[in-house]
Image (tube, rainbow, N blue to C red; front, side):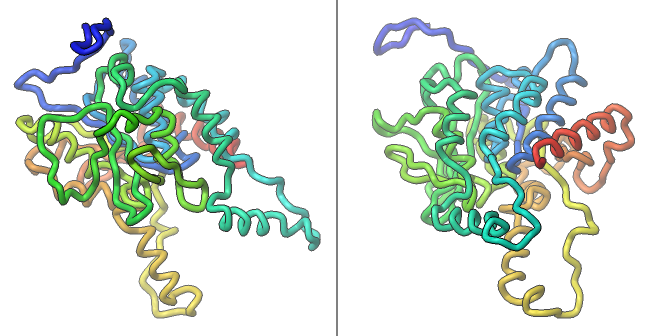
Length: 362
């Protein structure tokens, strides 16, 4: 295929849906180092598919927030298998999250090192070194590859949406390797970032850097022409609702997707969730802890709540049986649960997750 402007030849894969087929959509939550659990689930899915099939062969559109964006970039745009991504993730996480040694139990100035580090991180707007993060991203992603270049699309054929957010008001923003034929309303709940000038074409690693710039952990990242951006998890830790809307924009005549798989990074135990009890102390049930609990349990931050809220916007409710929520311990099919522990294969995978996560914490 030749560019009509520069006349240079380029290999380009165009993924076109037949008129009778609706899209298959993948949504990946944020969750920091728990992203390895997400990769484990995707690895189990690839093993179940068999015949050498990979995730990019199945899904027509993928939306990812924070570590979910990193995972989709590696699997879909880099062409890695879920197995390879799962294997590489611990080393990547160790480069990015280098914690200080545990302080001594004896009270001394050294035993306060952890608290001093937290205060310093707060004042510096980031507990972890952003330079180390950027270097790790450049090793994982071609440092010369740009977000809106043809090369970002040609090897995959799949459409990829990276979710970030503005620092001014937290509004979700989408960086994508597609445009879509449908119109996006001006007053949309999120902003679709597209280049209007030549300098508005960030490197792919920079887009990933924005999506993982979680407040308190990493400093924000400024993209030329788009301004400073931060982790998309502050507004859409589960990007399902945005991904559904983008699917309708790309394929406005296809309606509800044939299949939508939403993959999380963990599920809180019911025993760990706060219970409605008589008003306790101000430290437990005062205004500040109540606000924090409400924020952390909101659809913006809680992937489970985000999943069920997104189902309210499904254009054709009769097709909702094709919507799957996949957590480390459970499949969610609408209003009922089937625990993975019923599957021998899944139980083995779950043990492997525990070992890997433990390794990251040590």
